[in-house]
Image 1 (tube, helix red, strand yellow):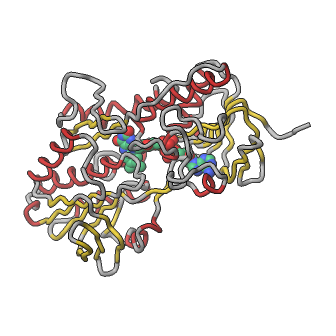
Image 2 (cartoon, rainbow, N blue to C red; image 1 turned 120 degrees about the vertical axis):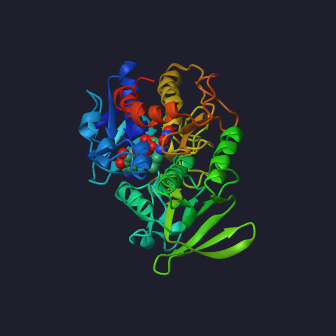
Length: 396
Ligand SMILES: Cc1cc2nc3c(=O)[nH]c(=O)nc-3n(C[C@H](O)[C@H](O)[C@H](O)COP(=O)(O)OP(=O)(O)OC[C@H]3O[C@@H](n4cnc5c(N)ncnc54)[C@H](O)[C@@H]3O)c2cc1C
């Protein structure tokens, strides 16, 4: 007899994706769903950009994990270290093994400091920071708001950064602050974007470039940070004109991210997925293991990962787990994603698009890809309660 705990659906990762999915499955009548996640504190990560802009605190975005795990869902507070998909077994760091009927993988991604030598060391100085890690978010605003002269460099990687365009929020809120405090002319602002556009949405991209232009920001796309020297406060960057060294007084990074190593270690990635979970980008079913599903930042679904994307992915996975069991046709995810980007401390636009950059607005009117005061109020003040009280409870 197999004495290992068994769950009808086992969810790996209790972040935005995992908790929303577990809650949704429970609402749909699944009686036995369990979640594995080592963290005791849950983060509403979109607010990190506002912490890094001096417009929110870390307390605003944290809740005990025990408060967000849905009622009736067992929670294993441990790390998954390996999956044996051929035998339907998940191994935890503490040695416990769990078996499953279906497995949903959503452990998110992690900052890949190895990809930019020197960047992690630079983060330990007061002159470099990121909003992508809670421990640096407050320091980002301390650094930016203290700058009154010199060069501020903002660099956005194109390697699996969660909701990458939100890395522009600290830039625009800082520029607005420097303008209001009368020092903008004394700050030389450089924006280095690794991809070809600020956002994969033509109209929003135009709006953001116009806003950058109005603040006098020098924008360079197709430009990657290769190395940081925190002691000398210099960067090595590669762009259209080759490699150059750039000095900085303040450096903000939206750093490259990578998949947790155990995904590839368990053979759940595939060629071309960079170690991320290899799923059909539409059905979210694993390409080799039909009872394994992938969603959120850890899955390769060929679109910009975001919390907004999960509003579409979670119902698809919940429906498809049931559909596969009944032999029905699987639902499909079209790659919808969204990036809310501030253009000042009072205005924000929403770039909503599919995986090919085609606009996919939630509302036809008004045009949400234009900066609006109401959108900033929505994103900063109304979205967090929607997250805690609806999305994490499986209501879309
Ligand atoms: C700074 C920042 C700003 C953002 N702003 C926005 C925004 O404005 N709008 C938007 O739509 N999206 C935004 N996002 C993106 C959004 O937060 C993510 O897309 C979303 O959180 C992804 O959810 P997830 O569950 O896949 O990953 P996560 O939320 O990262 O959750 C992953 C969970 O898995 C757990 N885990 C990791 N490893 C293991 C393991 N081995 N075993 C078990 N559990 C494990 C982790 O502890 C974590 O709780 C932002 C992200 C960041 C970082």
